[in-house]
Picture (cartoon, protein in one colour):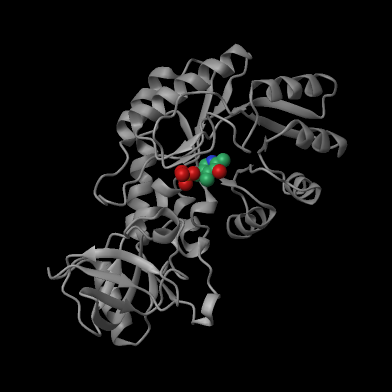
Length: 362
Ligand SMILES: *Cc1c(COP(=O)(O)O)cnc(C)c1O
């Protein structure tokens, strides 16, 4: 039996479910493998995927820095990892957040618009920036598109030109390069095509520091199909020219596998012919299946008649997985997989005022 299942059973026996169980040893090994697959490329972790302090401390052993997307994340990450290099991105930064970033000495600010750059320049402070470019590269069928067309993220080439003109007229804000985070859910060959396009654009502007973003694919329908970091790393090594700094900032693909959401069955019933298992907790603890419209993968201890697994909320959206071929009875342990990213931290915790889950680390 694996260490996370052992812990899940202990928590069940102690009446401490629902719980998030994180495999820190597994995270450590996975992050080491990702790091090793990307020689010569800087690796940042996108904290918004999961900013849990225990995870951040493990990841800090392997990453070159952390990408944050708000003043709140910035202060949180600084508190947990006082000496980490930090990149601060995200649309809609307030003046207070810009000042906070400068006070904390962030390594890089990712500029999202000409107006944001004007406000940064108006502080009169020194800063090192990347311009976030939204290039019209063909992305195809991806999980989430942040670029490649009209979106509120970053700037099209005209916006970048406007920024270059603003930067030319002063010298407190230093232009370091280009940032591009165009899509989420790309496999390694597609990520490399996008990287090639972004690098071509940066080179055209004479810039040598390029942050290629995150968005490496994970497959909730196939927990074993991990992003091909080896192919990606080799490809990037082939694309990189001497003197260029390449950086990536994945989130989901780094932390998703290390977490499980563990709960127990409260009731099983048949309604109009369909079998339902109601578990303690629900999408107010793990909103991922509701947001992404998928079935959260789970450990199937014993095969059985297809059963739809729902939580305790009074809404049909509180569905965790549909028609899972698992034999479930009242009191059984249920372990949802791939709950280490965009799970607890994106959920509406207080809807219906159920208790929060436990957090446990292995
Ligand atoms: C969310 C985000 C990331 C991380 O994306 P993943 O899909 O979790 O890898 C990286 N960079 C930026 C700018 C982001 O907004």
